[in-house]
Amino acid sequence: MKSLFQKLLIATIASFLGFGCGQNKDYQNAISDGSYQIAAQDKLTTVIINDIFSPPVASRIYAYSSLAAYEVTALSDPNYQSLMGQLNGFEKTEFDTTGQIYYPLASLAAYYKVATALIFSENLMTEHRDKAYADLLEKGIPDEVFERSIKLGDEVGAYVIAYFKKDNYHESRSFEKYTVSNDPGTWQPTPPAYMEGIEPHWNKIRPFVLDSAAQYKTIPGTEFSTDPSSQFYKEAEEVFKIVNELNEDQKDIAMFWDCNPYKVNVKGHVMFAEKKITPGGHWMGIAAISSKTAGQDWKGTSETLVFTSIAIFDAFIACWDEKYRSRLIRPETYINRYIDEDWLPLLQTPPFPEYTSGHSVASNAAAEALTSLFGEPFHFVDSTEVNYGLPVREFDSFRQAADEAAISRLYGGIHYMPAIVNGSTKGKSIGNHLVENVKTKSPSFSPMAENKK
Image (cartoon, rainbow, N blue to C red; front, side):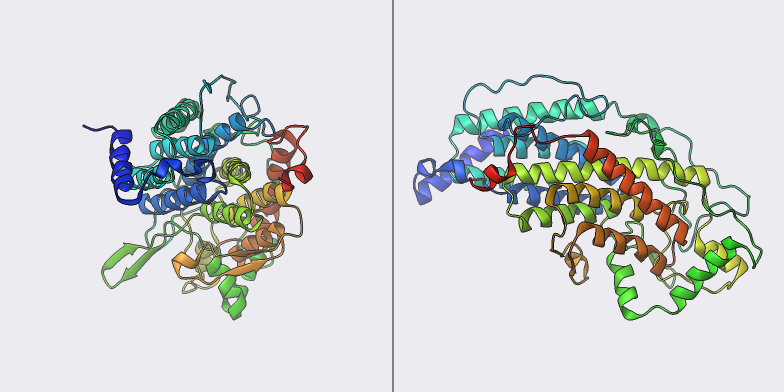
Protein backbone atom coordinates (compact mmCIF):
# COMPACT_ATOMS: atom_id res chain seq x y z
CA MET A 1 0.00 0.00 0.00
CA LYS A 2 1.18 3.52 -0.74
CA SER A 3 1.91 5.79 2.22
CA LEU A 4 -0.02 9.01 2.74
CA PHE A 5 3.00 10.95 1.52
CA GLN A 6 3.29 8.83 -1.62
CA LYS A 7 -0.36 9.38 -2.43
CA LEU A 8 -0.06 13.11 -1.94
CA LEU A 9 3.19 13.21 -3.91
CA ILE A 10 1.46 11.59 -6.87
CA ALA A 11 -1.23 14.25 -6.68
CA THR A 12 1.45 16.92 -6.57
CA ILE A 13 3.28 15.51 -9.59
CA ALA A 14 0.02 15.47 -11.51
CA SER A 15 -0.53 19.08 -10.56
CA PHE A 16 3.06 19.90 -11.58
CA LEU A 17 2.61 18.35 -15.01
CA GLY A 18 -0.60 20.21 -15.59
CA PHE A 19 0.12 23.61 -14.12
CA GLY A 20 3.87 24.11 -13.79
CA CYS A 21 6.34 23.84 -10.96
CA GLY A 22 4.46 24.46 -7.73
CA GLN A 23 7.63 24.28 -5.63
CA ASN A 24 8.81 27.61 -7.02
CA LYS A 25 6.01 29.27 -5.11
CA ASP A 26 6.60 31.00 -1.79
CA TYR A 27 5.29 28.17 0.35
CA GLN A 28 6.02 30.09 3.56
CA ASN A 29 2.78 31.95 2.90
CA ALA A 30 0.77 28.78 2.28
CA ILE A 31 -0.64 29.06 5.80
CA SER A 32 -0.61 32.56 7.26
CA ASP A 33 -3.91 32.87 9.08
CA GLY A 34 -5.91 30.31 11.01
CA SER A 35 -8.17 29.25 8.13
CA TYR A 36 -6.76 25.73 7.82
CA GLN A 37 -7.08 25.01 11.53
CA ILE A 38 -10.55 26.53 11.68
CA ALA A 39 -11.56 24.36 8.71
CA ALA A 40 -10.20 21.32 10.56
CA GLN A 41 -12.20 22.30 13.65
CA ASP A 42 -15.34 22.81 11.57
CA LYS A 43 -14.89 19.32 10.18
CA LEU A 44 -14.33 17.94 13.67
CA THR A 45 -17.57 19.58 14.79
CA THR A 46 -19.39 17.88 11.92
CA VAL A 47 -17.94 14.52 12.95
CA ILE A 48 -18.80 15.08 16.62
CA ILE A 49 -22.39 15.74 15.59
CA ASN A 50 -22.38 12.72 13.28
CA ASP A 51 -21.01 10.43 16.01
CA ILE A 52 -23.42 11.92 18.62
CA PHE A 53 -20.89 12.61 21.36
CA SER A 54 -22.26 14.02 24.61
CA PRO A 55 -21.38 17.62 25.58
CA PRO A 56 -18.74 16.54 28.15
CA VAL A 57 -17.10 14.07 25.77
CA ALA A 58 -17.18 16.61 22.94
CA SER A 59 -15.36 19.11 25.16
CA ARG A 60 -12.62 16.52 25.66
CA ILE A 61 -12.24 16.00 21.91
CA TYR A 62 -11.90 19.73 21.20
CA ALA A 63 -9.48 20.31 24.07
CA TYR A 64 -6.90 17.63 23.35
CA SER A 65 -6.96 18.28 19.61
CA SER A 66 -6.42 22.00 20.18
CA LEU A 67 -3.71 21.28 22.73
CA ALA A 68 -1.69 19.27 20.21
CA ALA A 69 -1.89 22.06 17.63
CA TYR A 70 -0.90 24.66 20.20
CA GLU A 71 2.14 22.76 21.43
CA VAL A 72 3.58 22.98 17.92
CA THR A 73 2.87 26.71 18.02
CA ALA A 74 4.91 26.96 21.21
CA LEU A 75 7.77 25.12 19.50
CA SER A 76 7.67 27.54 16.59
CA ASP A 77 7.80 30.85 18.45
CA PRO A 78 9.41 31.81 21.79
CA ASN A 79 6.64 34.34 22.31
CA TYR A 80 4.31 31.43 23.10
CA GLN A 81 4.74 29.28 26.19
CA SER A 82 4.24 25.54 26.18
CA LEU A 83 1.46 24.27 28.42
CA MET A 84 3.68 21.39 29.54
CA GLY A 85 4.22 21.79 33.24
CA GLN A 86 1.18 24.08 33.48
CA LEU A 87 -1.58 21.51 32.99
CA ASN A 88 -2.21 18.66 35.42
CA GLY A 89 -0.07 15.66 34.49
CA PHE A 90 1.24 17.24 31.28
CA GLU A 91 4.94 16.71 31.82
CA LYS A 92 7.67 18.46 29.91
CA THR A 93 9.45 16.71 27.08
CA GLU A 94 11.63 17.60 24.11
CA PHE A 95 10.97 17.22 20.39
CA ASP A 96 13.46 17.07 17.55
CA THR A 97 13.08 20.30 15.60
CA THR A 98 16.31 20.11 13.61
CA GLY A 99 16.10 20.73 9.92
CA GLN A 100 13.65 22.91 8.04
CA ILE A 101 10.12 22.58 9.40
CA TYR A 102 7.00 24.36 8.23
CA TYR A 103 5.40 24.82 11.62
CA PRO A 104 1.88 25.80 10.48
CA LEU A 105 1.67 22.43 8.71
CA ALA A 106 3.13 20.59 11.71
CA SER A 107 0.52 22.22 13.93
CA LEU A 108 -2.24 21.15 11.56
CA ALA A 109 -0.85 17.61 11.46
CA ALA A 110 -0.84 17.43 15.27
CA TYR A 111 -4.49 18.55 15.34
CA TYR A 112 -5.59 15.91 12.83
CA LYS A 113 -3.56 13.22 14.59
CA VAL A 114 -5.28 13.72 17.94
CA ALA A 115 -8.75 14.52 16.61
CA THR A 116 -8.79 11.32 14.58
CA ALA A 117 -7.80 9.30 17.65
CA LEU A 118 -10.78 10.63 19.62
CA ILE A 119 -13.68 10.01 17.23
CA PHE A 120 -15.49 7.06 15.69
CA SER A 121 -15.79 8.20 12.06
CA GLU A 122 -12.05 8.38 11.45
CA ASN A 123 -12.43 8.24 7.67
CA LEU A 124 -14.31 11.54 7.64
CA MET A 125 -11.43 13.28 9.39
CA THR A 126 -8.66 11.63 7.39
CA GLU A 127 -10.36 12.48 4.10
CA HIS A 128 -10.49 16.12 5.17
CA ARG A 129 -6.85 15.97 6.26
CA ASP A 130 -5.68 14.46 2.95
CA LYS A 131 -7.44 17.17 0.94
CA ALA A 132 -5.79 19.85 3.08
CA TYR A 133 -2.38 18.23 2.65
CA ALA A 134 -2.81 17.93 -1.11
CA ASP A 135 -3.79 21.58 -1.29
CA LEU A 136 -0.70 22.59 0.68
CA LEU A 137 1.60 20.47 -1.47
CA GLU A 138 0.26 22.26 -4.53
CA LYS A 139 1.31 25.53 -2.90
CA GLY A 140 4.91 24.49 -3.22
CA ILE A 141 6.03 23.01 0.09
CA PRO A 142 9.25 21.10 -0.65
CA ASP A 143 8.94 17.34 -0.22
CA GLU A 144 11.52 17.06 2.55
CA VAL A 145 9.97 19.98 4.46
CA PHE A 146 6.54 18.46 4.07
CA GLU A 147 7.70 15.10 5.44
CA ARG A 148 9.63 16.62 8.33
CA SER A 149 6.71 18.87 9.29
CA ILE A 150 4.19 16.02 9.26
CA LYS A 151 6.61 13.91 11.30
CA LEU A 152 6.91 16.57 13.99
CA GLY A 153 3.14 17.07 14.09
CA ASP A 154 2.60 13.34 14.45
CA GLU A 155 5.15 13.14 17.26
CA VAL A 156 3.54 15.97 19.20
CA GLY A 157 0.13 14.44 18.54
CA ALA A 158 1.32 11.06 19.82
CA TYR A 159 2.59 12.69 23.00
CA VAL A 160 -0.80 14.33 23.58
CA ILE A 161 -2.53 11.01 22.90
CA ALA A 162 -0.37 9.37 25.56
CA TYR A 163 -1.35 12.23 27.87
CA PHE A 164 -5.11 11.91 27.35
CA LYS A 165 -4.96 8.16 27.85
CA LYS A 166 -4.19 8.85 31.52
CA ASP A 167 -7.14 11.16 32.24
CA ASN A 168 -9.37 8.31 33.48
CA TYR A 169 -11.76 8.50 30.53
CA HIS A 170 -11.11 4.95 29.37
CA GLU A 171 -11.60 3.60 32.89
CA SER A 172 -14.85 5.55 33.28
CA ARG A 173 -16.39 3.66 30.36
CA SER A 174 -16.77 0.64 32.65
CA PHE A 175 -18.16 2.51 35.67
CA GLU A 176 -21.72 1.79 36.78
CA LYS A 177 -24.60 3.52 35.05
CA TYR A 178 -26.70 6.06 36.90
CA THR A 179 -29.38 4.48 39.08
CA VAL A 180 -32.67 6.37 39.16
CA SER A 181 -33.87 7.11 42.68
CA ASN A 182 -37.45 7.02 43.94
CA ASP A 183 -36.81 10.17 45.97
CA PRO A 184 -39.41 12.68 44.65
CA GLY A 185 -36.85 15.49 44.47
CA THR A 186 -34.33 13.68 42.29
CA TRP A 187 -33.87 13.63 38.56
CA GLN A 188 -35.94 11.28 36.46
CA PRO A 189 -35.55 10.48 32.73
CA THR A 190 -37.75 12.75 30.62
CA PRO A 191 -39.81 12.28 27.45
CA PRO A 192 -39.83 11.50 24.64
CA ALA A 193 -36.85 9.11 24.75
CA TYR A 194 -36.50 8.74 28.55
CA MET A 195 -32.74 8.38 28.14
CA GLU A 196 -30.54 7.33 31.04
CA GLY A 197 -28.34 9.86 32.82
CA ILE A 198 -25.37 10.89 30.68
CA GLU A 199 -21.83 10.67 32.09
CA PRO A 200 -22.64 10.28 35.82
CA HIS A 201 -18.92 9.82 36.59
CA TRP A 202 -17.52 12.73 34.58
CA ASN A 203 -16.18 14.27 37.79
CA LYS A 204 -13.64 11.44 37.82
CA ILE A 205 -12.00 12.77 34.65
CA ARG A 206 -8.74 14.61 35.27
CA PRO A 207 -9.20 18.37 34.82
CA PHE A 208 -6.57 20.48 33.08
CA VAL A 209 -6.19 23.31 35.58
CA LEU A 210 -8.58 22.75 38.50
CA ASP A 211 -7.13 20.83 41.42
CA SER A 212 -10.32 18.75 41.50
CA ALA A 213 -13.83 18.68 40.08
CA ALA A 214 -15.11 20.21 43.33
CA GLN A 215 -12.61 23.07 43.61
CA TYR A 216 -15.34 25.64 42.94
CA LYS A 217 -18.14 23.75 44.58
CA THR A 218 -21.51 25.37 43.97
CA ILE A 219 -23.60 26.54 46.89
CA PRO A 220 -26.60 24.23 47.49
CA GLY A 221 -29.68 24.92 45.42
CA THR A 222 -33.12 25.66 46.82
CA GLU A 223 -34.46 22.94 49.09
CA PHE A 224 -36.95 20.72 47.28
CA SER A 225 -40.57 21.08 48.28
CA THR A 226 -44.03 20.51 46.81
CA ASP A 227 -45.65 23.07 49.10
CA PRO A 228 -47.19 25.84 46.92
CA SER A 229 -45.90 28.42 49.41
CA SER A 230 -42.30 27.15 49.24
CA GLN A 231 -39.45 28.84 47.40
CA PHE A 232 -38.85 25.76 45.25
CA TYR A 233 -42.47 25.70 44.08
CA LYS A 234 -42.23 29.40 43.22
CA GLU A 235 -39.10 28.77 41.14
CA ALA A 236 -40.86 26.01 39.23
CA GLU A 237 -43.88 28.23 38.79
CA GLU A 238 -41.60 30.93 37.38
CA VAL A 239 -40.42 28.53 34.68
CA PHE A 240 -44.01 27.49 33.99
CA LYS A 241 -45.24 31.07 33.56
CA ILE A 242 -42.30 32.36 31.53
CA VAL A 243 -42.52 29.54 28.99
CA ASN A 244 -46.26 30.09 28.65
CA GLU A 245 -45.75 33.80 27.99
CA LEU A 246 -42.62 33.85 25.83
CA ASN A 247 -42.28 36.61 23.25
CA GLU A 248 -40.66 36.00 19.87
CA ASP A 249 -37.25 37.33 20.90
CA GLN A 250 -37.14 35.04 23.92
CA LYS A 251 -38.08 32.07 21.74
CA ASP A 252 -35.32 32.98 19.29
CA ILE A 253 -32.78 33.16 22.11
CA ALA A 254 -33.84 29.78 23.48
CA MET A 255 -33.62 28.10 20.09
CA PHE A 256 -30.29 29.73 19.21
CA TRP A 257 -28.61 28.32 22.31
CA ASP A 258 -30.42 24.96 22.39
CA CYS A 259 -27.32 22.93 21.41
CA ASN A 260 -28.89 19.61 22.39
CA PRO A 261 -27.22 16.68 20.59
CA TYR A 262 -29.85 14.33 22.00
CA LYS A 263 -33.00 15.94 20.58
CA VAL A 264 -35.44 13.19 19.63
CA ASN A 265 -38.45 13.74 17.37
CA VAL A 266 -41.56 11.59 17.36
CA LYS A 267 -43.92 11.35 14.41
CA GLY A 268 -46.61 8.78 14.85
CA HIS A 269 -44.87 5.54 15.76
CA VAL A 270 -41.51 6.72 14.40
CA MET A 271 -38.81 8.15 16.66
CA PHE A 272 -35.69 9.72 15.15
CA ALA A 273 -32.81 11.87 16.39
CA GLU A 274 -32.11 15.42 15.26
CA LYS A 275 -28.35 15.99 15.28
CA LYS A 276 -27.18 19.29 16.74
CA ILE A 277 -24.02 21.03 17.84
CA THR A 278 -23.01 20.77 21.53
CA PRO A 279 -22.73 23.82 23.84
CA GLY A 280 -18.95 23.48 23.77
CA GLY A 281 -19.01 23.20 20.00
CA HIS A 282 -20.98 26.44 19.82
CA TRP A 283 -18.37 28.26 21.90
CA MET A 284 -15.50 26.75 19.93
CA GLY A 285 -17.27 28.18 16.88
CA ILE A 286 -17.38 31.57 18.59
CA ALA A 287 -13.65 31.26 19.34
CA ALA A 288 -12.95 30.62 15.65
CA ILE A 289 -15.18 33.51 14.55
CA SER A 290 -13.45 35.83 17.01
CA SER A 291 -10.04 34.79 15.77
CA LYS A 292 -11.05 35.65 12.20
CA THR A 293 -12.70 38.89 13.32
CA ALA A 294 -9.48 39.96 15.06
CA GLY A 295 -7.37 39.00 12.05
CA GLN A 296 -5.21 36.59 14.02
CA ASP A 297 -2.46 34.62 12.34
CA TRP A 298 -2.26 30.83 12.65
CA LYS A 299 -0.40 31.06 15.95
CA GLY A 300 -2.93 33.40 17.54
CA THR A 301 -5.75 31.19 16.29
CA SER A 302 -4.09 28.16 17.86
CA GLU A 303 -3.81 30.00 21.16
CA THR A 304 -7.44 31.12 21.07
CA LEU A 305 -8.76 27.64 20.38
CA VAL A 306 -6.71 25.88 23.05
CA PHE A 307 -7.42 28.47 25.76
CA THR A 308 -11.16 28.38 25.07
CA SER A 309 -11.30 24.59 24.89
CA ILE A 310 -9.47 24.13 28.20
CA ALA A 311 -11.94 26.46 29.91
CA ILE A 312 -14.89 24.50 28.50
CA PHE A 313 -13.37 21.13 29.38
CA ASP A 314 -12.79 22.02 33.03
CA ALA A 315 -16.20 23.68 33.18
CA PHE A 316 -17.98 20.47 32.22
CA ILE A 317 -16.05 18.44 34.77
CA ALA A 318 -16.96 20.88 37.55
CA CYS A 319 -20.57 21.22 36.39
CA TRP A 320 -21.15 17.47 36.14
CA ASP A 321 -19.67 17.06 39.61
CA GLU A 322 -22.54 19.15 40.99
CA LYS A 323 -25.20 17.67 38.72
CA TYR A 324 -24.72 14.17 40.07
CA ARG A 325 -24.21 15.37 43.62
CA SER A 326 -27.51 17.27 43.83
CA ARG A 327 -29.34 15.07 41.24
CA LEU A 328 -32.11 17.64 41.14
CA ILE A 329 -35.42 17.08 39.38
CA ARG A 330 -35.99 18.91 36.09
CA PRO A 331 -38.74 21.54 35.70
CA GLU A 332 -40.61 19.39 33.18
CA THR A 333 -40.97 16.51 35.64
CA TYR A 334 -41.85 18.76 38.59
CA ILE A 335 -44.39 20.89 36.72
CA ASN A 336 -46.10 17.83 35.22
CA ARG A 337 -46.43 16.30 38.67
CA TYR A 338 -47.43 19.29 40.77
CA ILE A 339 -48.61 22.16 38.54
CA ASP A 340 -49.86 21.11 35.09
CA GLU A 341 -49.64 17.55 33.81
CA ASP A 342 -49.93 18.66 30.17
CA TRP A 343 -47.22 21.34 30.25
CA LEU A 344 -44.24 21.06 27.90
CA PRO A 345 -41.03 23.11 27.85
CA LEU A 346 -40.10 24.96 24.67
CA LEU A 347 -36.90 22.94 24.40
CA GLN A 348 -36.47 19.23 24.87
CA THR A 349 -35.07 18.43 28.32
CA PRO A 350 -31.49 17.03 28.15
CA PRO A 351 -30.81 13.63 29.78
CA PHE A 352 -29.04 14.58 33.01
CA PRO A 353 -29.85 16.29 36.34
CA GLU A 354 -30.80 19.96 36.53
CA TYR A 355 -28.43 21.70 38.95
CA THR A 356 -26.36 23.52 37.79
CA SER A 357 -26.95 24.67 34.22
CA GLY A 358 -24.25 23.33 31.90
CA HIS A 359 -24.75 26.23 29.49
CA SER A 360 -24.31 28.73 32.30
CA VAL A 361 -21.10 27.15 33.59
CA ALA A 362 -19.44 26.42 30.24
CA SER A 363 -20.50 29.67 28.54
CA ASN A 364 -19.20 31.86 31.34
CA ALA A 365 -15.93 29.94 31.60
CA ALA A 366 -15.40 30.32 27.85
CA ALA A 367 -16.39 33.99 27.97
CA GLU A 368 -13.77 34.76 30.62
CA ALA A 369 -11.10 32.94 28.63
CA LEU A 370 -11.98 34.79 25.43
CA THR A 371 -12.27 38.15 27.17
CA SER A 372 -8.75 37.72 28.51
CA LEU A 373 -7.53 37.31 24.92
CA PHE A 374 -9.61 39.90 23.04
CA GLY A 375 -10.71 42.36 25.72
CA GLU A 376 -14.05 44.06 26.16
CA PRO A 377 -15.96 45.33 24.28
CA PHE A 378 -15.43 42.99 21.35
CA HIS A 379 -18.11 42.95 18.69
CA PHE A 380 -18.68 39.71 16.82
CA VAL A 381 -21.34 38.13 14.65
CA ASP A 382 -22.16 34.63 15.86
CA SER A 383 -22.97 32.60 12.76
CA THR A 384 -22.29 29.25 14.44
CA GLU A 385 -25.87 28.05 14.09
CA VAL A 386 -26.41 29.07 10.45
CA ASN A 387 -25.57 25.56 9.26
CA TYR A 388 -28.35 24.26 11.51
CA GLY A 389 -31.07 26.52 10.15
CA LEU A 390 -30.83 29.44 12.59
CA PRO A 391 -29.97 33.09 11.86
CA VAL A 392 -26.93 34.96 13.15
CA ARG A 393 -26.89 36.90 16.41
CA GLU A 394 -24.59 39.81 17.21
CA PHE A 395 -22.88 40.55 20.51
CA ASP A 396 -20.67 43.33 21.84
CA SER A 397 -18.81 41.10 24.28
CA PHE A 398 -18.32 37.47 25.18
CA ARG A 399 -19.87 38.10 28.58
CA GLN A 400 -23.00 39.43 26.92
CA ALA A 401 -23.20 36.25 24.86
CA ALA A 402 -22.66 34.11 27.98
CA ASP A 403 -25.44 35.93 29.82
CA GLU A 404 -27.79 35.27 26.92
CA ALA A 405 -26.78 31.61 26.72
CA ALA A 406 -27.47 31.24 30.44
CA ILE A 407 -30.90 32.88 30.49
CA SER A 408 -31.87 30.93 27.36
CA ARG A 409 -32.24 27.87 29.59
CA LEU A 410 -35.01 29.57 31.55
CA TYR A 411 -36.77 30.56 28.32
CA GLY A 412 -36.39 27.00 27.10
CA GLY A 413 -38.09 25.67 30.24
CA ILE A 414 -35.29 23.34 31.29
CA HIS A 415 -33.70 25.16 34.26
CA TYR A 416 -34.76 27.02 37.38
CA MET A 417 -33.11 30.38 38.05
CA PRO A 418 -30.70 29.21 40.80
CA ALA A 419 -29.08 26.77 38.35
CA ILE A 420 -28.54 29.67 35.96
CA VAL A 421 -27.34 32.26 38.47
CA ASN A 422 -25.12 29.93 40.50
CA GLY A 423 -23.93 28.15 37.38
CA SER A 424 -22.83 31.46 35.87
CA THR A 425 -20.90 32.30 39.03
CA LYS A 426 -19.21 28.91 38.91
CA GLY A 427 -18.29 29.31 35.26
CA LYS A 428 -16.75 32.75 35.84
CA SER A 429 -14.67 31.34 38.70
CA ILE A 430 -13.39 28.51 36.49
CA GLY A 431 -12.59 30.89 33.63
CA ASN A 432 -10.77 33.32 35.92
CA HIS A 433 -8.84 30.45 37.50
CA LEU A 434 -7.58 29.49 34.06
CA VAL A 435 -6.60 33.06 33.21
CA GLU A 436 -4.71 33.45 36.48
CA ASN A 437 -2.90 30.11 36.40
CA VAL A 438 -2.12 29.28 32.77
CA LYS A 439 0.02 31.52 30.59
CA THR A 440 0.26 31.14 26.84
CA LYS A 441 2.32 34.26 26.21
CA SER A 442 5.95 34.57 27.28
CA PRO A 443 6.60 37.42 29.78
CA SER A 444 8.54 39.33 27.11
CA PHE A 445 5.71 39.16 24.54
CA SER A 446 4.50 42.55 23.31
CA PRO A 447 1.05 42.63 21.66
CA MET A 448 1.84 46.08 20.21
CA ALA A 449 5.01 44.78 18.57
CA GLU A 450 3.19 41.72 17.28
CA ASN A 451 0.48 43.88 15.70
CA LYS A 452 3.10 45.88 13.83
CA LYS A 453 4.50 42.83 12.07
